[in-house]
Image (cartoon, rainbow, N blue to C red; front, top):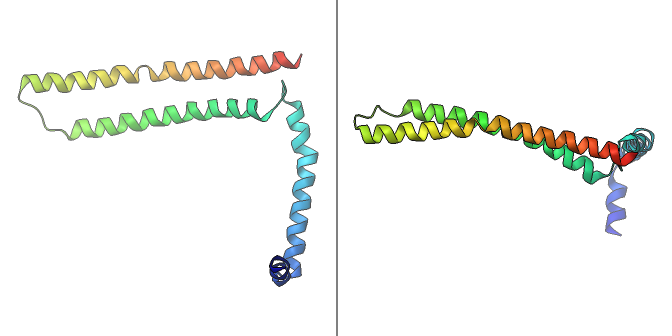
Length: 129
């Protein structure tokens, strides 16, 4: 009863506009959304599409995180004072070299994720036939 009283307080124009938007959304879904989902190779299920979207997002995230990590490490490394002690200097060089070696693996990780995406697309195409 409280819900109907609250809905009556909303002006009729807004209720009509909301009903029209819902009708247009339903029409758009039935006209374009469902046929497009049916045309996706494989079953076109939400899980398969979500997995491939997740792969693309993870490639972008890994690239951005690697870039930000390099920038932060560079800023920290340039802000450090010069070290007179050779043992500490060797440790600092070792950390820098280790970070550089780790960053060399980022393109390989991205390549593996892209290859997994391609394999997933090919497998979905194969499942359709």
